[in-house]
Length: 216
Image 1 (cartoon, rainbow, N blue to C red):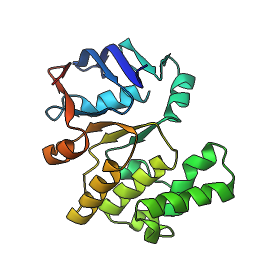
Image 2: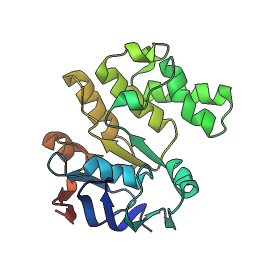
Image 3: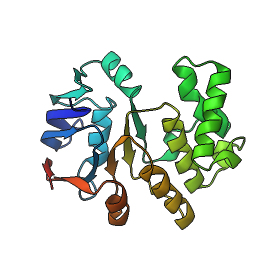
Image 4: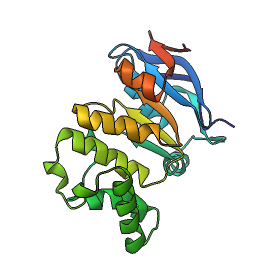
């Protein structure tokens, strides 16, 4: 059973030319795949379609062996698939780091006590405990990026989808991110323009170009 599967996906933004045409792909358990392609090829668009944030013109999406057709299907899928957005500010909206990281577990029905225990465990594991009580919007770009990953890992996802995760990272936080991702068990789907990062995290790849996706 594939963790994620796309079949014959076609997509166009209203009034614009087709971005994706006949796109199919699969992500298996334990697999780490990159999607590469030129700017504007539709890589971020494809990730948003997988997550149900955009609706394809045609084609089908399945997650964990179940079709995702309506919002309720994607809602269930998002409990098991963690998506790290390209812009950390799109994902961080609580006053403090601890509140941002606790938000997901609380949404899953955890008690406040259990959620705060998860906050401490995740931040400790990622070497970010010193940021626990910091005001989120005052963090550096690299710190925000790592906290965003913490908010996703707090949900204990089975799959990680990462959209340009090295944006705004200085060398120290870049190295920390590589260390963190290298130690995770989750399957990973990665979009990154950084060939060195892709080689370390998800060397197998699909190429998206001229509206089509092919396995490299």
